Length: 217
Length: 212
Image 1 (tube, rainbow over the protein chains, first blue to last red):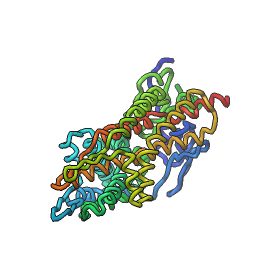
Image 2 (tube, helix red, strand yellow):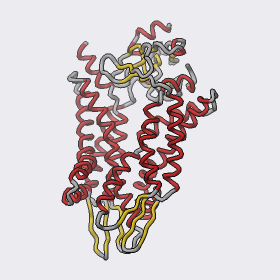
Image 3 (tube, rainbow over the protein chains, first blue to last red):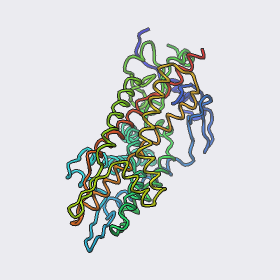
């Protein structure tokens, strides 16, 4: 009765794609996910939340987008982001300039939050996708894949690049008339990175990956 | 325990928060720490102590919300004159300068969203504690909206960051981050954690109990 061991359900069934047991993450109703066709979606019969979405060429697509994202991320951090011209003075900034300035002004907490949400989290997101999917594409398993794939899920809500773009838009409007703002290569890379990373996230079939990098199948 | 009894006893089933793997918890296991066999995350039938944790975070965020709106988020020092901006005056500035679509977005992201999150989470918590069976589908949707929309509150923090970066190095004007920005960043982080610690399945537990 007090046996604390757990049992993986239908572990044999999990090898075959059609049909496995899923619990709705919103309302907890157990239901059987049937044979989902490519591009199809399985929904919870009670509350309508998505249980599983099968994506065509998920691995190739996601990996390609993640690699493209890595190039854009590097460009966004290396090249000048915005330049500020005011009465003959030109100030060049990179993505991390604001973080450094906030830190030097004595608000390290805000600086860390900005660093986390615009640089660290997006980097972890892209690199962990490549780390997990790259070897899978080559038909390999490398140690740490399980852990890194879990990290990806933890990091995702803290990656806020699209909100940062909104911040840029608002800042530009506030500076109109005060100075001339020149967008740099990094800004355009950053703007491109957002749809690329969003597409990578939505084309990722996590259930498919978990069956390959998970410890139990 | 046979595999059949696991599939029939719905009460014992739990899905892993991290990878969705369905595990049958045996006996009293939902009080103990069980690890997911697929990804090694801790598996709980419900997020542990969800109501207390979420209340604590909601109250904390509500307390941070007050100084976040009273103190200036940034200070513009231009030719010896200092001008301070709060969250609210920042949105008003855009409105006064005729940028009303952007003003609306900023007002929504910085003023409405944090308040809405706090009210919605309090409502969900109370509805679960009172055991309401009323409209579980809509309440679940409300939770997902709260979860998705919270990140947009960061807009103002980014505006401060960008303005500080661009202007602090110039000689004629300097922009500094104010205490309000620290509190406001606190509101964003704490409300995100509050949304994360709430377990939407609790909505359905009570609904199910009442329906029998």
